[in-house]
Length: 64
Image (cartoon, rainbow, N blue to C red; front, top):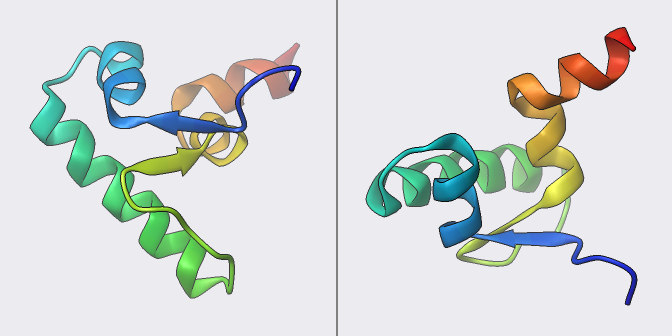
């Protein structure tokens, strides 16, 4: 596997510089959005690509 396609809560917390409990809320929100779109989600993990798109990191890549 080249790179992990899902991020764990610990990785989300570290990436955003927030507490682990707040990272859980972010993961839950992103997973709810994906589930509403019809995607299958995994509790406690979020799709890395979707995370990057929904945070400020996705905007940086599009501008370059």
